[in-house]
Length: 571
Image (tube, rainbow, N blue to C red; front, top):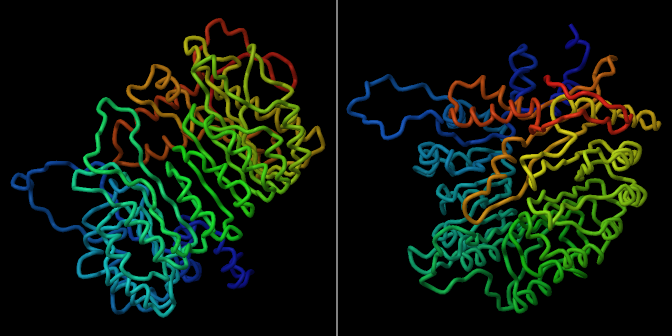
């Protein structure tokens, strides 16, 4: 048997690279694989249960037939196993606990109550001898006992506090020094005052400075946008920290700000207090942080990663400041710009870039055309940033033609690329006459085939793992009130295709339509909201031919120059 030909130590190294789903499958192979995979599965566990999407609401218990209680499953079963006195071995395997979710609404409140009642989670933490990290994203389960238990744990696990929006919970936490907290994220609405004066920001400030070992801090200040009713605050709005200069800033390595405005006085304290040489990662947006980039220029000079995103049409306000920041240092390895563009000269200062994303949303106004890189600018980027491994750029079709010079530069340059993503506009300026050549199943397959052929013709070795992504749609777009007509058009025809070389010798590329795969997964589920399935099915059907175009006379291949007919089909 092949398994016996390889030592268990080697299999263990192989299993270390497997996904959670793969490990679950390997557990079913035999007892040996089960003995290797099970400890790896328990090493990092998630204690979050989710609501049943088909759960009936407002159900009258008086008319519901009594049923036998269900056996515990999922997180309920996992929790019961970890609490079992006989399972010391299982508890010894656990190194990381995650109690967080991107969506509060989907979390099962009954399970959270189970963790909270009788300090259940605190008791469990105390019984995990090898715990190294715990992530909590539900302030409702935080208690003084839980925090104290984590701080007093013999392994000194790090604590990540996410979604800290509860003023009451943060107030109790901020009464003590929290050396275990290494990550803190919060989203606050400073103008919400239905329960009295809003002091969320000040409470968060106090908590921030009670974490002497904090390495990552994320703050989003929710600001009113659009709507038919303007909310008038009843009390003074506190939307920023109120510093005195006596505060000792933690050694931040990662900082994320969204909608947070620094005035001159507060900036002085940040400028003099932050350990700038330790800050290696900065994320800003999508809400404006007015004047932030200009303030950071000359100070945030040790950054390795910069991620800036902006709502469509709003990036122009901070463009000059961003250029100034990018021009003040040259150490970036990752740069992501979504919704805001900069001259290529400011970008190419950073010759060590390995990941670059330059994306601007498509505009529905002819007065504000989308900015994309020209073939000449791509050539400059190729020469100046030879270490690029991942590149995401926008591509513009004009005069019913592919931009052959741009596509040829992308195919024959950037020799170290491992992935390339190209975003195409849909033609929101005139949705009655979408842009040609059309993006659909057939054209994407032909497009990808010629890209890889051209790259190999240029003598560039192409790995089987190289992924070419062609997509349409948007990242950050919002409307103050009702969305315009083009919003539905954009949603319907948004599509993402991933193209890669075949694993066999056939020579034909493989195309994955991600929305189609998502729909296939939904079809296998029994309990799915019908609206979700219907809307996704409409997008998949629309991708078969792409946006409707009248008098289609054929499309031209971007590399060979030969015309070919548009045909339907699947990827």
